[in-house]
Length: 217
Image (cartoon, rainbow, N blue to C red; front, side, top):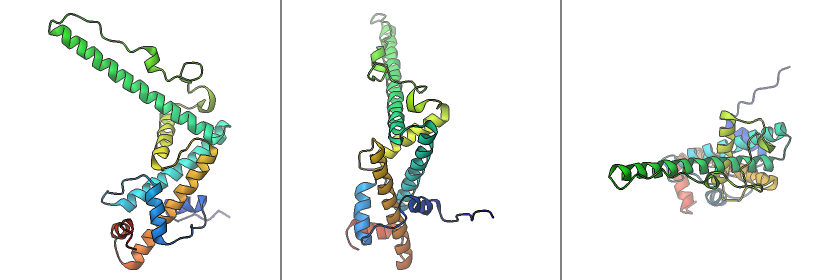
């Protein structure tokens, strides 16, 4: 017999997966903790939807990271750190390329104005390469990222950086990731509770959230 299809919304499924039982505390207490922990655009026109999307995306990444770590036969923390370091290296190289292009354009402009021809400035290799213990940024072919490339690597690296930016706690190793998963799940429980409470009171989700922000509930 085929397994029953889980028809619950994605956010509810992910929250229940990582924290089956909702945390104790009043709606106001849950709001205070979520507003402190979760980094999202609370000032947008639809802040509850923004929070729900942030939690769903983050917990979805956590699930994908666990699968990737199993595939790579590495600790999740090791894969996470490698992804974050790779993203940092790529960003540094992008900035250095922009710096070199701007320097070359300025030199060409000065030469055109008769200030004397100057060779375009080239960035030093050490400015481009993200240093590691041996002086060179690790290749993706090595370590936890072996076999990854193209769009898959880009998606995972971007997801790791977004995870760090979405929560006001440090995330580095497996224990930190476990703490992050629980924190995201707790924030998700708050979003679900707020949505249910707003429907029960017959008020808008944003209106109820604003009252909670002011401590009026």
